Image (cartoon, rainbow, N blue to C red; front, side, top):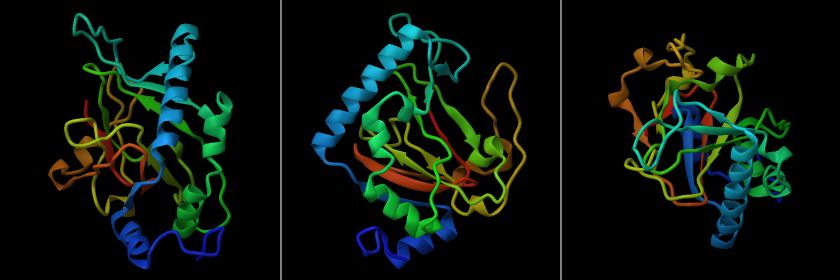
Length: 214
């Protein structure tokens, strides 16, 4: 399969990796100037959303950076409806060409979202499969995770269970939480940690078990 410019965005080995493991790490996709522009817009939108309460805290309690209490895992759905810059990002051929290599040319956006973990009090997201939330049939969606900061095991990087996309699982919803939790369905010691530089991307299948720590 070829991208919009007639060339494959991924090697055959990368496509096989995605099919077998349920995810593939691409590395840095954006230039430094693009990262700076998107960071600025990201911060502006979240600051505006805080003032107007047009975001959601997926953690149980709000954080207090000065007192060290509470947690925040802030979510904004449909960034493309709040920012032309983020709307243009959805049509970036570098992203679309990779998606095309993974699932074919008939692409449709399901949704986009932005997640923000404030320093020192950013909360976790439990182990889950995305399609446990979405319930899409057939389960053939892919997500593109893009980072605006360097991420590693000490910085809330995404953890994934290779091969877990091959079997859907039931999830529990903990009391006082909007998040599903499938932690008891997997062995977390099998996880791979995805390390990415700012402007990096990773694509994962909608049934790949993943989570991000605090």
